Amino acid sequence: MTKESLPLLRENLCMCEDMMTRPYQTCRRCVMDTTDPEIEFDTQGVCNHCHTYDELIATKTLTGESGQKRLSEIVTQINRAGAKKPYDCVIGVSGGVDSSYAAYKASELGLRPLAVHVDNGWNSELATKNVELLVEHLKMDLHTEVPDCEEFRDLQLSFLKSSTPDSEFPTDHAIVACLRLAAKRIGVKYIISGANVRTETHLPTAWTWVPGQYDWRYIRSVHEQFGTVELKTFPHLDLWTYKRLQLTQSWIDILNYLDYVKKDAIAALQQSIEWKYYDSKHFESIYTRFVHGYILPRKFGYDTRKSHLSSLICAGEITREAALEELRGEPYSLELQEEDRALVVARLGLTDGQFEAILKLPPKSYWDYPSHAPFYGNAIYRGLSAIYRRIGRKEHDV
Image (cartoon, rainbow, N blue to C red; front, side, top):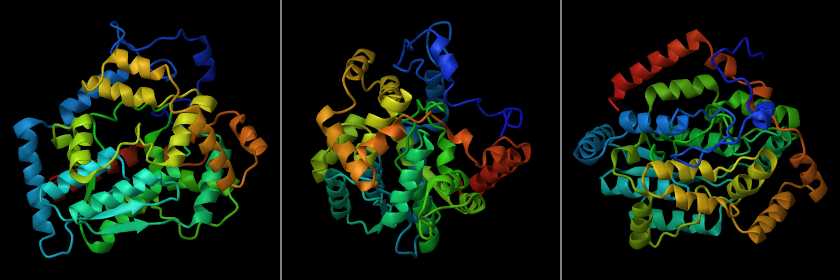
């Protein structure tokens, strides 16, 4: 793959030379900085991520009466489509705040979802308890998907050996696949998600190219190069199956139609179902905690707290000064980092020396492995994607 063949895609994930020569700068509005090598600043020193945030808030979210009205219309549509079925939608639950609150509100709005949870073997005790409390309180049926442990271990190890920052892509892909396949299996069109603009918009493509998590060719190519166990049962969607399901299903981020405030959501969950917070975004998973809090900062220089905190700053949930103060400390306690390291090394069948050698490998990226990237930059693919989106909107009006 060459830069010339992908004119619409970024040049290189790491941009190491640029990072070495570019003066350090931090956004004057949020806490994103030049550890994102592609960050841009306007004349006021405000970064492109903040401008993207403002654009998405204006175009993708509704608040107050407008949000309530739109949400009521969506709920009516979902109820009508699933009137004669045991469930009218599917919802993913992880034990984290966003997905838990989305499930809480879905139930409050009168939806009848099948809750789907992907247990990859790395759940913290707190996350498992949160899921149990949630479905018990909301009286939801729960389907738990458990990937084959040997296949998944081999896939995780493959991604570590690939030396990319995408170690969570196998889990991310499995979650999307399980939700879409579950919806197809039970015959519903609607998938409810806890994703939202307000708390997760500052996402540097240089840190990880998010569409790559949907790219089974990329995930498979990494495994083919570094794996040893055949992936016979791992839940996945190839490109064309994914596109077909997109055409017949609607993915709905209901938090974008609410006046969503994370601290208020946490308080509501704690009061109603004794749900407990877990200190930071995505830390409901031990492996995710280790990847975000240990591997990414040490190997790539990426502190993903900057991304999450920056969105919260723009949402008015935290001050920039408080965020900067939080960033002065470790992502999580050094003692727990060492416990997590020992557990990860043992579960993946590595020695300390082998793990250290992996950490010292030169950083690579999505763009260094076979993928569907050529399709994403192809005019025909972009045109077909636009048609898919228009047809989907016309079909479901969501």
